[in-house]
Length: 184
Image (tube, rainbow, N blue to C red; front, side, top):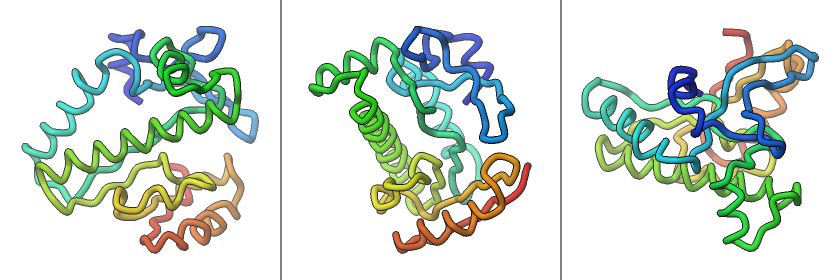
């Protein structure tokens, strides 16, 4: 997420199937959050903004690691022309929810692997926490990419028991777990 970038480049924002930008999220409690989600497959977002930004930070500032919050896709997104084309090229039907979810997961895994490789090329051994593996079924894909899992569990959104349940689930991957169980 980056509202400044989304404002300057609406052509990089993820899209719903009806062409609307992904700029809202309904939480479990019914409240709504507003910000635009960027799609790593759209335009030159990664090449022109994200990779140069990350590499500048790695080269310029002392750091222990990189934390990428809210990496991924909301359910029922993204249907931008790049994602639809890539799905068709892979023999997947964009309207098939299972295929679409699989494609989004593969996109984020590819993104996270490239991020890890770029980090290793500049400053080997830094910690990486990224939210695209914190869902059920994604944990084992994180090996070799993340240093630890961060489990964000906002009580107003997911309830008080989500943090211990998710921490227990991700712990079987053999990586440390960092809990973020409060609003921040």
